[in-house]
Image 1 (cartoon, rainbow, N blue to C red):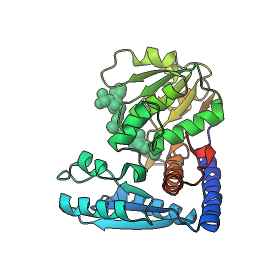
Image 2: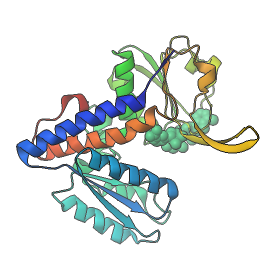
Image 3: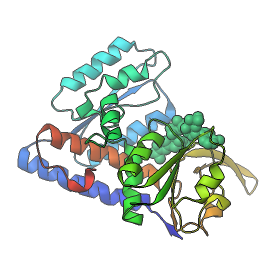
Image 4: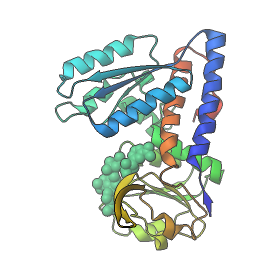
Length: 298
Ligand code: NAP
């Protein structure tokens, strides 16, 4: 079985992005800029935002970080987003989710200029993707598709199953696979025969948020598996309790049956930030009518 090395693939992708950024800087004197807004003190979000900032700068782009207090009013947040919408040095805006409960997430997302919506969550981008038009594509499913194209090649006619129907992973993944001419099934918590559906699939994308949800005997021989899940679990090693990240797929149990699988960590995770950089570069090119890097555009 092949391990789909998302870490290595994302590094190559980041290098391509960096090269393209250099060309834009030299030829057009424009530096792509990504603004990230973080509300509150959520520890996981702080780590993500810090990593995004580092990788944005490493790609040669400008990184703008805006930190707001947990109890910030919706008006202050919306005013900040409007200011970023108007700022010509900002090509991409990302508001780190989840937001504190008193803020209306949909309202906030839809206040971002769709051309700067590098998360691809704005309702206009969702609609464009849904209708097969050019849009900003959500980073995690975009990364999954890039890995599938690389390891499977032509996806046309393949039977694909997406486990999970969230707005950030499952639904856009369904649309992307459909666009690739797969026959796609989406399963969720109310689906009756998940095991059977998975068993007949050439491609499995698991975005459930439950450790080792997909069992070995659910996997068809020769299937390609993309494991989106990131779950922290406790394990005991030599009498010492530790925590460890595992995916939504039982990696050990599937590895003899599957043709290829993404590991956790080191699979989809690193692709997500690389795709955020790709989207920022694409947004910058579209704003300034510059040639878009073809390998980053769907
Ligand atoms: P989510 O919003 O919680 O959605 C989970 C989906 O799984 C829902 O559609 C839910 O069905 C379905 N589900 C839950 N229990 C199920 C069950 N027993 N049987 C079948 N379906 C079930 O999660 P998400 O945001 O899509 O994220 C999914 C996982 O991916 C998480 O582990 C998350 O940490 C990870 N993730 C990773 C990245 C990355 O960069 N690698 C990015 C985003 C998310 P219902 O709709 O019926 O409730």
